[in-house]
Structure formats: C-alpha cells, structure tokens
Length: 173
Image (cartoon, rainbow, N blue to C red):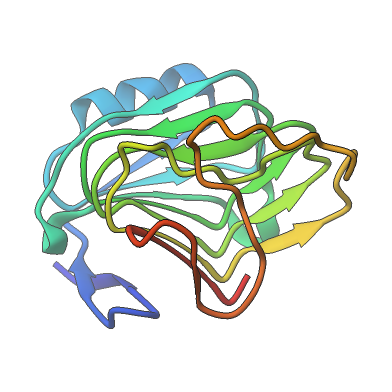
C-alpha cells in the first residue's frame, strides 16, 4: 500500500490498505464496524447528523482514519466519541454543536475545524490516554459563557503545546 497519512507530530507514517467511501451516517457507522487494519474511511461532502461511536482498536501503523472531504466540506453536527485505540479523525468541520470526545488510547483529533460550539468542542474523557488534539481551527463559538464544572473531564485550552492532565496533549490549535 501507499502512505496516506503522516502524523505531523510523531512523524509516523500510516500505510493505507483499504479506502471505504461513505456519504451518510448509516454508511459511516457500518464502515467503522467493518474496518480492518489500515482502513481509511473517506467522507463525501455533505452533512453528517447525529452521534457517531468510533470504537475500534488497531496497531499504530494500522490506525483507522476517518477523513473529511477537501476544504472541510464534510460537516458533522453531532457528538463523535472515540473509544478503543489508534483512531484518527481529520479534515472534518464540526459545526452547530458538533464535538469530539477522545476516550480511548492514542486517538488523534488532527486538522479539523470547529464552529458554533457551546462549552466544549473537544473534550478528552477521564479514561483517555495519550490522545492528541492538534492543528485544529476554532471559529465562532455559539457562546463563551460556559460555566465550568469540575466534573473530572479535561477542559480544552488553546495554545502551543499545552498539557492539561499529563495524558492528553493539546498543541498548535
């Protein structure tokens, strides 16, 4: 296979073995459930409404990649929860309340765009480990007046190379 993803921070190349093209949340959910090592799920341009559970585990060189269409033309409006290990979500526009919750091991939220969120756009869960949130664009939150509650979750802080809890890195956002 050919290299289809190079992690910009760890400089690890992931080898593409299979590409699955999807255009609906139902197809996306099925593609996640049936993914094999090295699968790239390519989202078509369009809106993906509703919650998505990304719950697979792969080796580092065989990570599952969910990749949006060019120019952030794939728009997610629900909550995406990443459990399991070694999943990469990239190139997707999360809008109008759309957010990502990395909750597994070594999951990556890299190169996405977030607009219109309230409270948390990206929120690693307490049980996450070695998750990475990097190179994302944050625009036009619906509200900054979020009341912080000490619920044990990691709060999103923008900046260069900030680490909140020692297990999840946030940088270059």
